[in-house]
Amino acid sequence: MGMGHILVVDDEPQIRRVMRTTLIAQGYEVSDARTGEDALDLIRTEKFDLVLLDINMPGISGVQTCREIRLASDVPIIMVTVRDSERDKVVALDAGADGYLAKPFSVSELLARIRAVLRRTSFPTELEEKPLQLGKIEIDFQARRILSDDKQIRLTSKEFDLLSYLASHANKTIGHRELLQQVWGPDYGGEHEYLRVFVNRLRKKIEASPASPKYLLTEPWVGYRLELPK
Image 1 (cartoon, rainbow, N blue to C red):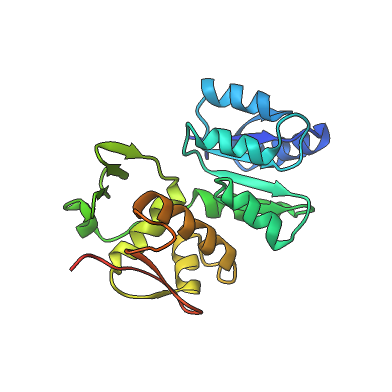
Image 2 (cartoon, helix red, strand yellow):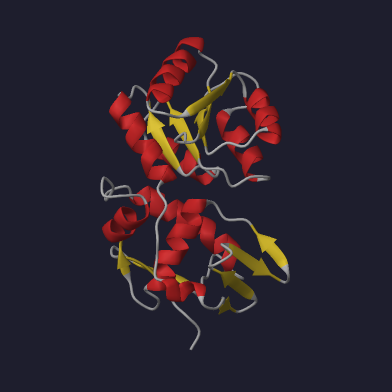
């Protein structure tokens, strides 16, 4: 049984070849695309477990491609950036990516990022017993979905994992490092931009007023907590 099906999207043939060779050697099935348009066509017809998406490409950019994918799919996405500035990282995450990787990167770093994004976190079974009601929002942890006015709201796997961890420690502030290590893995801890962006993404999905959150709260310099209705 394979490790999963990965789509590599990059306009440079050499990078696609190296990625393909490396990932196949690790047991992954690999498809590739040269442009964002080609990637979107493939995603409409095939099932992928992960997309490795270059941020700079001809035609529609990697960022726009990521946004287009997010309109229809919650497939995990790692954005590959040329620069390692915080702004580039935030742009990648804010477009809907689950992680990022800065060029140049080593094989071990590539594989570690893939493992982190594909990592599935298990939480206490009591979360699955009954849906959590936050105003008009209903969170069904067993079905892994959010309902608002009978409309389903799509979450990426990492958004759901983060929300689940906060819910399993409701009304308690969880520190940045603990959240990163529990949701993304033990190699994480200082990537605060992940949390800022993901919390903002979640607020847009569960808060009536994301700018003035009622449930998903920030404890400055410490972490975040999910405040449940009394």
